[in-house]
Image (tube, rainbow, N blue to C red; front, side):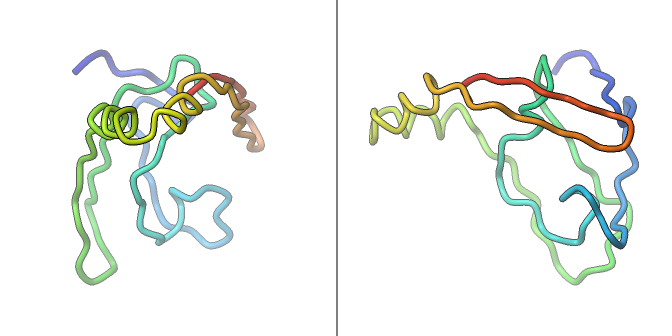
Length: 106
């Protein structure tokens, strides 16, 4: 898959649900498919989450093929695909010890 890229959270992060969370990963909210860490340069290739202890009932595991989704969008809505590949929005992440900013098309 590739080399491990260290982040401000370290090489392997222990993510826990906490009160007054400042980041979505620290909440009990389920994670829907999304673009992760676009404020990093280079962006992560893959992020694997493994649940060691689950306080909730149920839960689904999923893997999304973003390349297939992009190809489907390119065929079905070329204008929307062009927006994703040509518009360069800015992304930022700030906390008490870290300031990350980048920009570029999705």
